[in-house]
Image 1 (cartoon, helix red, strand yellow):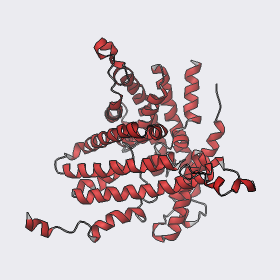
Image 2 (cartoon, one colour; image 1 turned 180 degrees about the vertical axis):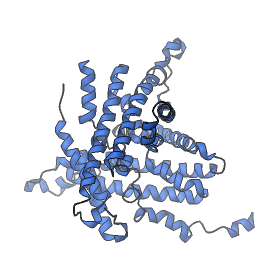
Image 3 (cartoon, each protein chain N blue to C red; image 1 turned 135 degrees about the vertical axis):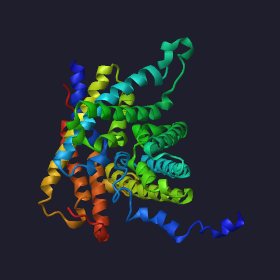
Image 4 (cartoon, each protein chain N blue to C red; image 1 turned 135 degrees about the horizontal axis):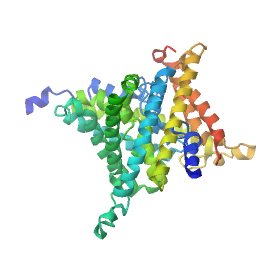
Length: 205
Length: 219
């Protein structure tokens, strides 16, 4: 249990998707103009990451990694399909996003309308594919660890986008040098937030 | 056949040249179109991975543009995103395997970012905006042009980060060779850390927009 909490906290603060690995920057920059929309997108990302990372974990463990097919019999023990992982992961993500969209539409129309266009766009958000690829690279051992990593990364991304949206709402009233307005200042603020997040480095529960 | 050839516009007409040169400055994918930031920032701590990454993106982008442009009349619009993703993912797998075979160290340094070329917004953006509506040759040029626009930002950022962060350029110890350390010069370790990539790109945007006033945004 302690291990799970450790992974969760670590993936929120230390290995933050935005500040440490720059994943999901495109939608982070494009959708962070108001707090309201960024909360919607953030929740959708937490949701999708929490589902796709465990599913991709199972795929990786029982289908793709070296020797994973040994449950089929000894003949398959040497098969290594890991070169297929990119295409499998992206297919899982695209179909999961579709599925999540349909489920939300059916059971919670209010949430569905508030997420709007963001749900389908999540399929091409690098934070989602990045989550699965990091899960594969870091070799988590149980599905619980993979899930807590996925949820933690999602929450980290959520915090980052809501934070920058709040700052951007306020910065409208400041006198930013004209060439820096918009994109430029957002980059620099993100950099400064990243430096602040680095102060969490080395924390271990 | 011969009449068709005479009617064709020359391979490097003024219009086609624009496709290559516009993305270098006023339609730059990173600083103006805001595409493909994720990977651009993460691989720029050193020059070598930045160069390898640029070449990989160029290969994938140019080929994907050509393939999708050839298929453009046969792809049903409803499923075009999946088709595009499959084309991109297949090309990225090729690039990844080539890197693992011939440049293993660099491919370890790039780690997940080669795979993340799949969700690099430059690819989807250019496929949607250009290749779906244009012939293969202009699409190829558009791909090369946008990849070059992406590459020069990557290389400039990586140059400054490596120079000030580790005192080397492409692994060559410039600062030591110039003898700066004798005067008490120290490497700025901050430049290696991720946040400085964002600030460096911010400064590039600042310089670019103060030279080209058309690009300035309303707050």
